[in-house]
Length: 393
Image 1 (cartoon, rainbow, N blue to C red):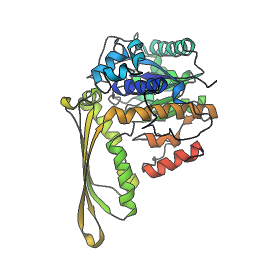
Image 2: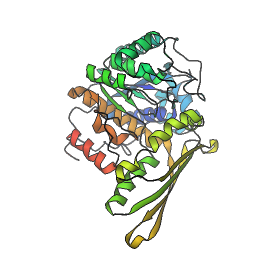
Image 3: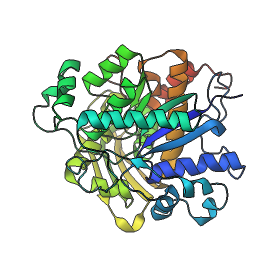
Image 4: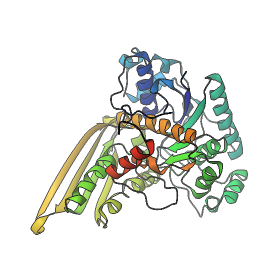
């Protein structure tokens, strides 16, 4: 009998989470194929099958996940009647939230205040989830809205001891995302951050994960525009086509877009999206511009537009233009699912701390030694394939 893996999601009522859960439930019902799942064709010993994933999680809304999914508009009545009906029975657990960190996203379904109390309640939820669902193991994935960066000198983020003191004193530099990461690591539960928010990438929590030998990975899922950028840039580099400038703009109207309509949250996002080109190309692209605009009519139908100015042989100038009309959550959900499976595989193998090999899933991959990450997609995929050691890569 296969092991049962629990996936506890921060932001379980969001578009990405409900899309991921619906897709897996439809696979279990036989009404959805494995199409669009990056590792579906891999034969890796110990990797949990999709059918053995079981979901729960936290959100600021009390609505059923079915109602949340209908509101986001990625899936609808057809999917809910065709295998995903379980979402109508699922409700979020009370969540940690702060309008000081995420100004445009709020709700009344909140955990009690106080950092230590929140950590304790998160861990109680994880234990109850494991028991009620008869789970063999659990992983935590952060799919919540983007938080702003911590303000002030944030001295509590400089060491493990300072972080513990910050928990005791309810230091405002410790964000909800960090509380979830700490709670998971302290409970020996693998954790991944699919958002641009600071979480297990702060030094005290990265150190904590290494000490406890708990797998962690992040941050900010690489789904659309940045994914294409890390595919195209290595090809331009290898063909000796010099990138003179790269202008990127996005419009989206889902809850992620609403969160990013706040300037402080937007700053966090732009920090992860704008970091890839220089490392891939090996030189600074002085005119690399990235813009994100909240445009409500689009909903989850995101548009990412790029203009690339290049110089080739004989100094001749050329341009490349790319218009990616994509469904944001349909790109993100499969990655969240695969991240959960890879985290669990690392845990089974005893691979604790930062999981460098999972960088292919993220815009700003966390690295074990704090060095600059590899950003080029082909190189990242090779690193993951080598780690998986599967028979089909």
